[in-house]
Figure (cartoon, rainbow, N blue to C red):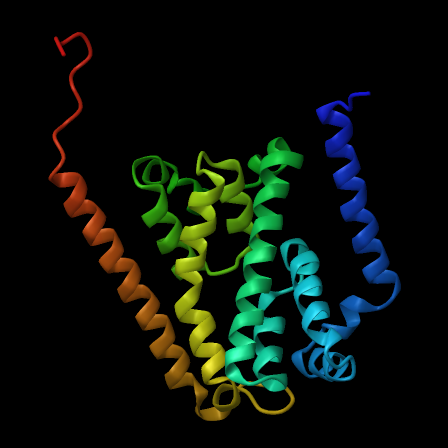
Amino acid sequence: MTHSPRGAKLGVIAGVLIVLACAWHFGVFEQVGEPRVLAHKLVGMGAWGWLAFILAYTVLQPFGVPGSIFLVAAPLIWPWQTAFALSMAGTMSASIVGFSFARFIARDWVSARIPARLRKYDAALERSAFQTVVVLRLIFWMSQMLHSFLGVSKVRFWTHFWGSLVGYVPTLFIVSYLGSELFDASGKLQPDAWPTLAGLLFTSLVIAALAWAWERRRLAGEPPPPHPGSPS
């Protein structure tokens, strides 16, 4: 017995809608409304909090819940090493879900809603996919729209995976390592945290600029493509 691709897609869409509906029914969206609430909930779950954190992040972030809620909550609960590992696992899982939903489930619908500020990177993705994914993650981080844009682009899955992983490392490391200095016990930004955040933004932009410069230099050193009709 075979199942049509259309039937599989409808099944996945239904599954996603059911999960989101259940999350809304049981008040999950209210519980992750702020880092303090999420942290309190996960602490009460003990060892299961690790799994709950990753699953909630994976399912909710690609469909509207800000990833910053999870990133802020993690260092409020666990040591920075654990917070970094769980934040990376959740961020990558959410990215995969958002990417896969756009590529395999709702490609046409998503493609029509990609903003022009991302579409301008189409040519760069065709020339140097990995470096461009890294730069986009450094600039836009875990934006739901970026998940979707990469999903409808020509970027291969594993290029997206590894490029996203590299692009996420600086932000997740700094937020996990300096979490207690950046946020208070309620998850609100500390008054003296702005210089650190400015430094994080500056570092991300510098890395992105260096990546772009390296790629432009590499492309400049490549021979031009042969003119159509010329002998090979």
